[in-house]
Image: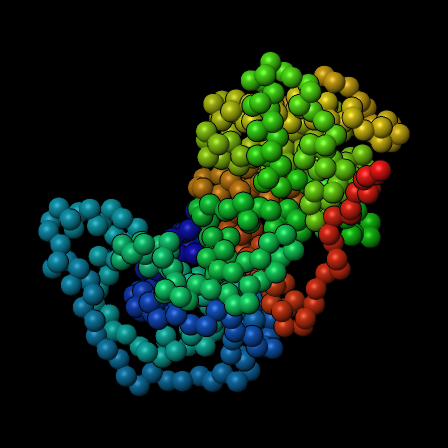
Length: 426
């Protein structure tokens, strides 16, 4: 739970909590701490008690068995509210009162107890982003981040780390790509942050691994990557410009290599799959959607987390290169017929998936990744989607996995795409 993000229920609970005297002390103190906290080392590892919170397992940094209760022996008086009132004109005071901090103006003067802050910091828990402070208080996780600090102070939230402190050395190895900056995790963890091609390619790589190496996979599938989207769209533009020139569709094209399962790590031949998941970017809308091809049905399903009449029309248009070109590529391979897969040159039908949860911020790429995982696990997509929880889970899992590989010298088996048959040069 973040102070400034979350559900209405969470915001109500936080507002009630922050109306208390101690909570206000905590909030202002954490604001002062944030400039210090983002300078702490990127990782802390201790073998302490595990805490399960919102499907994310976190470790206390300090062993809770060794904590002791201390009595308050000193206090300090801060006239925070009076200082705010004295610095603002009547007009600005009215504007301030309408913000999320407006109810602070109704609080009386208060005294600060340093032991409260000490007790909070003793309950700090590990997490994958050192631009955040996570506390576990009686089973409830509190998060204070550089996002809140930037909002309060007007600092640039994209400049989270000090110069030179953003590097991960050596880089974390994630198969298809290395991650060398901490901002990669920062963008993954925070709601409203746009994920990059790197995030999606790495996430979908591990989804492919999950399906390919599962002992009892629930569904036969493979995925593509962001490059596939660019490749097929570029070919489609040329295809249309040349009045649907079918000579552009050849077995030597890069798309044919994807279909053979040779273009990506952990790729599978499509004729052995029932479904193919596509990462699709609506460039005119700066929006990501998920496409899922059901090969047997010859139908492409479109998952859109920002569904309006205009957005859905643009999403269906973004699916057309897949729907039009892939049937022609499939016809080049006898393997589809051998596997009793339907082969027809007519375009695939594009169907919108209804009843999906809708994004309220810039989280479309996280929705794409989660929609894909729900399908792979054959679980229904819930109508209410906690994007913060899903981002937390992804960030923690990737960070801990990378550290495990690094600390324990664990690496996956060689998953390089299989080489094609040698060419006859004679």
